[in-house]
Amino acid sequence: MNSIRALARHPQFRAGAKDMSGAALGIAAWGLVTGVAIVKSGLSVPLALFMTFTVFAGSAQLAAVPLMVVGAPMWVIWATAACVNLRFVIFSAQWRPFFMQYPRRKRLALSYFTADLTYVLFMRRYREPREGEGQMEYFYGGTAVNWFSWQVPSVVGIVLADVVPTHWGLGFAGVLALLGLTYSLLSDRATALAAVVAGGAAVAAFALPLRLHIVVAIAAAVCVGLLIDASGGNAPRRAQVAT
Amino acid sequence: MNGWEAFVTIVGLAAITVVTRSFFVLSERELVLPDWVRRGLRYAPLAALAAVVVPEVVMSQGELVSTWQDARLFAVAAATAYFVWRRDLLGTIVTGMLVLLPLKLGLGW
Image 1 (cartoon, rainbow over the protein chains, first blue to last red):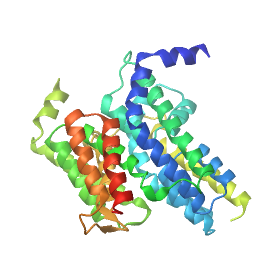
Image 2 (image 1 turned 30 degrees about the horizontal axis):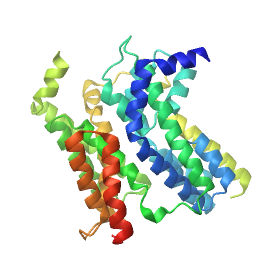
Image 3 (image 1 turned 90 degrees about the vertical axis):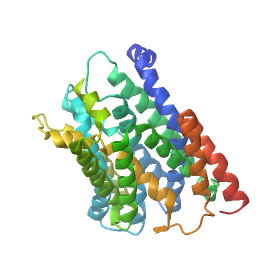
């Protein structure tokens, strides 16, 4: 108990919580809409609650539920969720240097909580692991706010699915949160171009099943970023790396 | 799908969350990523965000929007202007929603 209290008082825990709070309204609106959508697709309330507290991956849940309702084979549902979650496999390569100081069991527990926004905010702040910067405290702060601001509205959406007005477009608050985060990651010409390419590729590849357009967009943007790096057109970033 | 099957399916989905999110941190063995992969991956967070956001703004039902009378476009313009002005995430969300809701509920855009 004391260690939890000490953690909550840690300045980096607070910094992580504060950064995530900026996006919390968007996460909450999105969690609410996801909760409603899952029950409206036909999953029972107890199963929907069980799902939100265990699966903890909004887009995989939204992809899986319609398949469950029509009675698709389990392996099809699991394959679908795995494809929707492919981006997390890419992200996990970047978490590795930060998590490898811990035993495997703890690495699994930490990884479970590495949702999209946790990843984006953490990687925006830290390039590489360093002792004494409170990096893990920052992670815990962001994760705590992320978990509550997703789960509480999800439960509300599941329980009150019939009365929440979805036609208001409340879920768009989640898109606006991601939009603001995107802007905050733009630091130079290379990142701006990578973002434009990713957006364009996502629209062009949108017809792909299983939200694979996101993986295509990441691949395209990474290629463009590397090309710009190689052509030396990204001088500020190079200077940063050199110091 | 009966309740029991649904339960097993959900347990499997939770396992998939853990496996995909921990994929490259599971092994104790040294993971040697080529330098270009490590440099390239720095663009991944930004790309993933843009890949989610852009279709949500400019597409509906899998098609590019063909009308300017779409509340989302104005909401994004307002949110962008706010972000450029204050660089604050919460204000960006609130500004966008303050533009979106009246257009959607009032004008039906």
